[in-house]
Image (cartoon, rainbow, N blue to C red; front, side, top):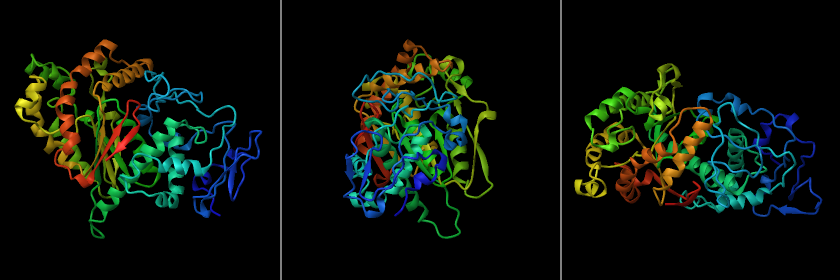
Length: 456
């Protein structure tokens, strides 16, 4: 009988003395109803697992301590109280306007409850996985999920360690975020990587697969990429992450753009097409594709959104992160990835100021989109959600002690993106990203709580 691989990674001293093996069922061994059990009828016999009750104390996660602090600083923190609201694990049954109190850097908290939680059966989790909205799109059947349940639980374990959540005390939104969203997307990426690598002969240099993530601001794409990057590293893949933000013009370049377009509010600040250093992005992406051998290294540019009171500037190269080959995958995310130029009359009908932006967009395919091999497009129903999501992020930045925009500045800032959303999102959703192969595009529709509701 196989023990869960995820449990083998925990030191014995952290295993409760109340952990037991059961062939046919799993008990909650801390409640008074000792005859309450869950039968594992649908899973193969080999998938009967050891139950790990909640820990009385939380060990320091080796995964967290070994992960780059620069990445942790980008993530929201979580409350230490079970059932509390989380910015990115939003519970739709509660207040949607809840905001994150701090950022993750140096302020991670344990979310393990002080008292043991109800232990759900693996059967229940298996059925929850099978009910996910992306399952049919990915061609997964209940039999395939049952056969690979060890991997699903291992990935879930890694994610719980990354975000310091207790895998035995996840809320429904948290389970959905892991088992209906992050892990299915990870499996999709793994499948694309395998197909990409199969195209090359033994001994040939294999360039990394570049996966583009196109999604509106604040909808959780950065957290998704953060989680996927971590899972790749835990499974032995060398990966790199980039954002279109990393290619914004410097503060000086932005000032020149503003001076050249004094009457165009859409180009007053960073964001729209025209506010990026395209030659710099071509140089960076070309170099990344060449990281095919051991020992080859390069630094990835980073952008500091907090500089100049939230107006932003390119970060000093001394703080850029370094990656080493051979890279397997590059995760490239941005709010306008895959946008394609439209007829002039179409953009003028949305906003006359968009005409210059539309013209600038013509150069973006060669700078970004042509480097991307596979696409994940996150679809929203109403672009107005972007304002609330962006406001939450800025509040979190301010409360973490970093400079950020005021509420009014956020409203003004987002208003400069809305014309592009209204003009380009319908075509993106209907036809796919610029130059993409439909076989390599995963479209995921999410709700206001950032949880997937549909995949097609």
